[in-house]
Image (cartoon, rainbow, N blue to C red; front, side, top):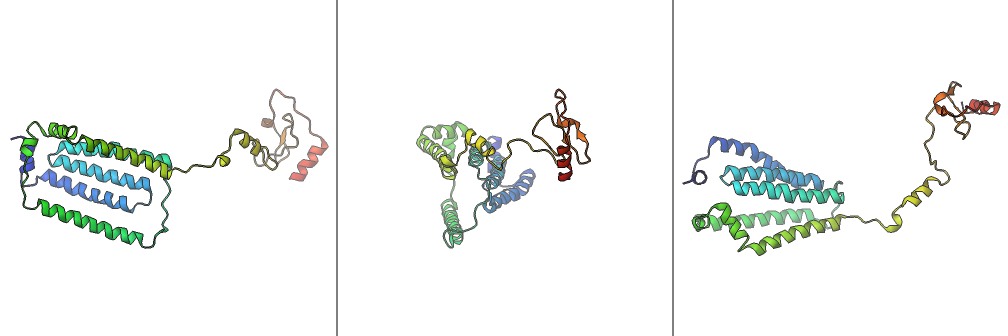
Length: 256
């Protein structure tokens, strides 16, 4: 009998397993509540990632390393990252609207969700209570991983491919529904942007900083500082400095 079989058949819980459960169970519950309560779609997906990671560790602790690694690698590492990529791509960073399009839809969804969960839980309890597992010995004769792989890619290959197509369709549908396409007339090309910059009232170039007074549009005319001195950095060194006239001085006094 292998070590995994002994661990799975044991009726007692070891100390390490109990400590792992009491540490990760509150985190998994917190992630589930945060996923439902989060207003931001990206934050909701990240909370779900936390819950999936905790579930993967639970599977490993319960002597199921294969399903635990599948939970972490496939669901958390691939599918949830795909959903996050789609959410980031379509720009769903804003909070959802709290205005209900249908009156009472949140209460109805809560009642139906609780009722469905109770129905599924009751069905599983009546189906599994007092029963013993049959057929596991033959299924795991060549190994658990090998047996799951053989069934997955032979008997259930159609369901596997349909599930893959469903996930891809869901991702593409989320992109199509959430993507906001701007009208062609609302887009500004380079020519329209240039014309908008040079329209009357706009200034195409950088304006002088505060306290600097320009008296001419010539690059050879030095700027005046608030105290009346010339700004040496306002003219290139290779150009001769233009002498200020009386009109420039009068303009300087007026601007002050």
